[in-house]
Length: 554
Image (cartoon, rainbow, N blue to C red; front, side, top):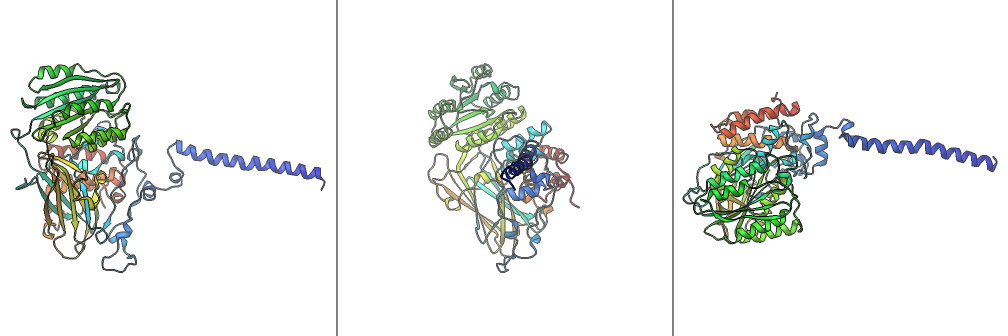
């Protein structure tokens, strides 16, 4: 073969390579990205279900790790499904159950934990309710909430529970258990904390600073106008011992109304009515001014609280988020608390308000109607304004000879290291007057030993330094042999928590369905209107999710 012939063959071979391989690479590359743009990954196009994708992408303690017989050797037991059934295969879940344009990632659900490995479960209380009210708002628009916005504890704690009042101390804990309606062979344990009630006459004087977002994004009727109505509802419930100040932030910060006696309603209402929405948003500067006002009145014998009313769509101005949160922490130490009140949709930042409330030792609510404004600011005024205990921690100690495995449903954002339970420098949650806190555990019981668990509640009085501790015991006799014998409180909490776990895509809820939750809720209405409303919403949800989640158990 001549050199010329060799060169010609080399050129031809090179052209064939370019014409054959390069287009193939381009097709593969662009094909993958086209699928991504269309919302379908290569896995989904290959036939993988949403449940399988979630199983591989969410890191949690595998159910099979806890499916061993507690008396068996270390080798995995063959009959895993008897303890923890594998996730069921389900149809593809609507996009609203995945992201729905959420601005923050979903929190990984608490894992199943072996009691022999860790018998303590420790968390800070949470009385926020914004997640449930936001769900109700989504439903009013015919949509399911993004799974990232579903926080189980805020759903459970939205509702009224008729727990016994404390006989001594700030709290009483109501304990009971029953067989799980969702997973055969497992039980649910309810921990219901009731705070002491404060009457209107006993309530401390309140010095409130409204910090109102008046940026252009607050223009719509469900934002600033509803915020104005909400403030008026609150002011109408105040007395001559209370004061109100008003600060706004948009393109700049305005000191609209100095501290004014709450009885001067004409002056206060005129200042509220004069507000208008325009400009950009600089939350950091507004918070600084509002907190300075509130700090002037911070003393042990009164309530000093900043109430932020916003859609959460905010930049923070000239300071960083970490600096802003650190500034809030300094005012918290002076005794100033915070309520973060959310309004509107579209650009609503649920994550911003939750973080503010957490850092500000306060509570977080979402107002979707005048009725909700009356509920938060009128019917529950004392609980909304007055903290009866701060840095409230709950620790459940399970007996390893009575309980094999447990999982706390929700409270992922409120987890506390077990070793920090008695460290009074560690920040925790706050409870308002008359508030209840409900937590549910899934547990696998073993043996016949009693008691099953010891529940400890540790908290400080407002402004206090040292915490006091109360102790409560769950005996085996408090676990009912059937769910029908459990209280309406337990059955309803199970309905709400189960629904929330399904909608947030918890791996443990892959084989659960909403018909079970509906039957539970229907049996536990207890003549309470908020429970009846939930039942109606749940029935609508069943028509919006895949049949695997909605249908009755065969």
